[in-house]
Length: 79
Image (cartoon, rainbow, N blue to C red; front, side):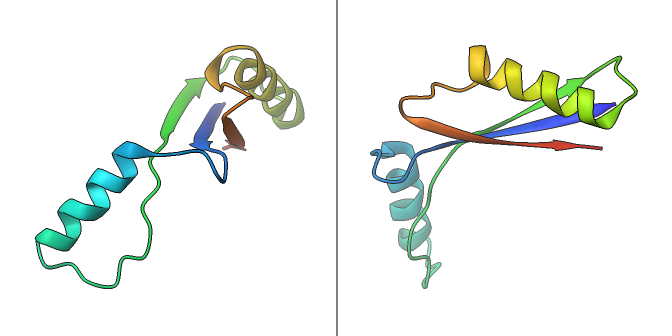
């Protein structure tokens, strides 16, 4: 099964890369972009065939390694 872990900065955490992208978009003429936040998506190819077990494994991986729980949140999608 594939699991996708999306990691984003928590609300209130500064995102200088997102600010830079937002500024660049504005300077390129893209108006109406209120806020830009950057994150990462980690794609995992898991041997597990049970969706619930695959989700639990991916969530554990995210808690232990993939996301910094102090400043980042994550969500897991299993397909």
